[in-house]
Image (cartoon, rainbow, N blue to C red):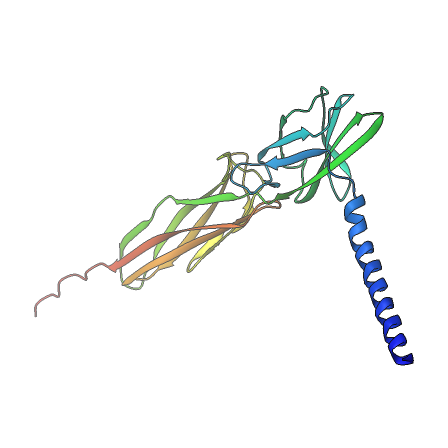
Length: 256
């Protein structure tokens, strides 16, 4: 009988402990304040709340309760808490749609927030939503002044060639030239003069390729370039030079 009472006490203690745990888990969900605004960030070609650097994006806002004041909207860089955009909307449920641009030099790669503030029923409300700025994409292309080189030279001499290499880099999204992109050029054979540098205001970097070949040389030389800039993805491009060097035929042998 005594053991039965102890078992009942133990079962009751377990039940009480379980009930307390349930209350502790559920209470925050029941007491949590429900969002009073819907905020979404949209950019073409990206998932919701993802924006590429240099890209325009739209912010959709809809209040779920009628405001009694104007609506303040601000875009922040999350880590530094630096204000990037700010505007004021007339009071109303909306929906509202704003457009901003993640400008290079203003925005950075990483987490950002949109804060929406307004008054309603004598209280001040703040709704915060987050979005991420990711790297932009660049597009690099290469042009050569010549792609086929041919020469005929005497025995024991060489044919010397010079080819101009031009690498052009643009923003893949907008097609606009990119200034200040780092470019590195390498070749399978020969020498690249000024193999590293940066693009100019037209998004162009120019270098020279020099090489010398002896007779009976038939080769295909690959020229490759890598383009990179902070805030952008890396891109590569290449082109080929076909080389053919033959030996001039010797004079006819004199008869005896």
